Length: 412
Image 1 (spheres, rainbow, N blue to C red):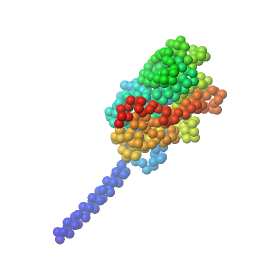
Image 2: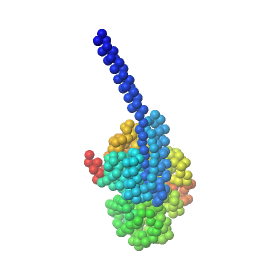
Image 3: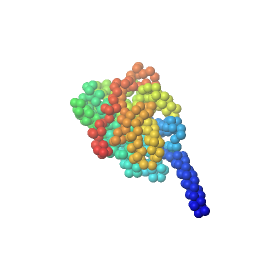
Image 4: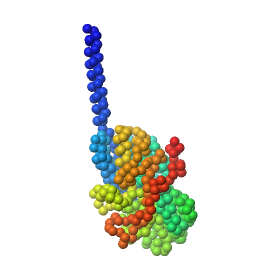
């Protein structure tokens, strides 16, 4: 009699344990992963067209495409955005508030190297994820590299070795730099100067201007008096546009000097018009009119941004966000930022804008770069038809070799 009671009790306990295990398993399978993405960008100033609202739309499209490709995924995404106003203190305050109070898991974009370098350290300390597309400083995969950061789209080394090298090889062997006076401009000037000198060119001078400058007259007069063949514009966005417009007013190009736009975006060319921008040589990693896939994506993006042309920054935000979500889904967790970035490096990258690629141990996303020349008005077939492809720089040559960057992560 006693044995039967024991057996019956054991059997009931086994049934209860089995039911609990099945329930726990079902709960785990159905458990939702809530991801919060913060688009930290320039909404109102000189980088608003190349990033800004177009960045937020790129994030939205990435989320939409991830969910479409993964209909059974339990990853739920919320998007927030903010304007860092190109000020590092404002950017860091937003980043801290997002992470500490609002539960943001990943920050994307951040056009402005000063802001990006500050956010890079916050993300590392708080073990979240930073996918930079807008900031150019190659230091983000060099001495300041982080296991929590991916640098997606382009950087100052790539720009220097694309545009700078091409111009020197075509006879532009004396340079004067007109440089934005903050981290990005300094890095672009440094990396381009190294390329110019390595290829037999000579630096004859430089001048630095405050970010978001409206009057370039004194700076351009110094560049003009230098007699340098090439005036290297180590600036971006509104500063590049104003530099080029005012250089035309001073007759600099008509006088025999050439402008080298070291970072020129499709939005800049659109704002300048082909009459002013024609002949500019530039390096990009994305062009909306490159193929059927980029054109189809652009058409979707333009539904929210009519009349605009997407830039490589916005394309990089889309691709980086999509790859991040793939990594979170593969890990089934978003909690450990370092682990998510490690998974991003482990997974091959593949999207409709950049194709197949990889992310190196230093966080550098690797893909081809393209040397373009801005078309003459007579060569353009319509709005947005702005570039002629001059050369493709293979992925293995487009970015700084890992051994030369000084990233501690590269040493294992």
